[in-house]
Image (cartoon, rainbow, N blue to C red; front, side):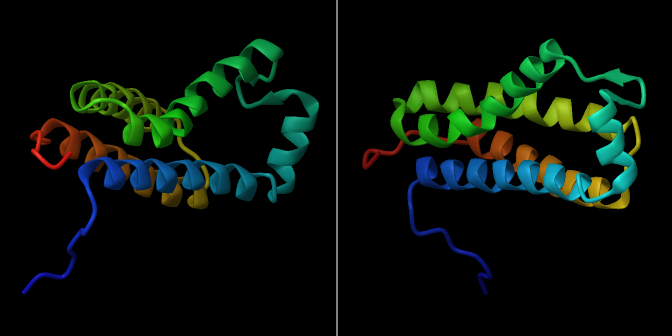
Amino acid sequence: MKIFEWHGTRNQLLSLLWVFLTVNYIYCDVFTLHLAQYLEAFLSGEVGDMKITEEFLLAFAVVLQIPMIMIVLSSTLTFRLSKYCNIVAGLITTSVQTYTVTMGGTLHYMFFSFFEICTGLLIIYLAVTWQQESAE
């Protein structure tokens, strides 16, 4: 008995997973701003050992742009490019998220991170095992 069955293409599924991942990133950050200690730290420009500078925010923006651009690229690139871009983007985003979890965090951060890492691993798995179909 099947519990899940996908009726679209692999491109569509990967794109949907990137949407799911992006929304999780955004909501985790929004939730963090609801904690007074973190909001105050962000407003002061220092969160733990991190200094919030324009360069830091640019680097953060570049990393967060990866899953957002993959929403589009997963559906528009050719098979081979899409496969390899999904693998590379999945490795980057999952590695960054896994690294940040090792620094600790709030309960909600760990909760969101679990789903973010699992989604990244699923994206990597789907891309690695993706075989070109004649219909795609």
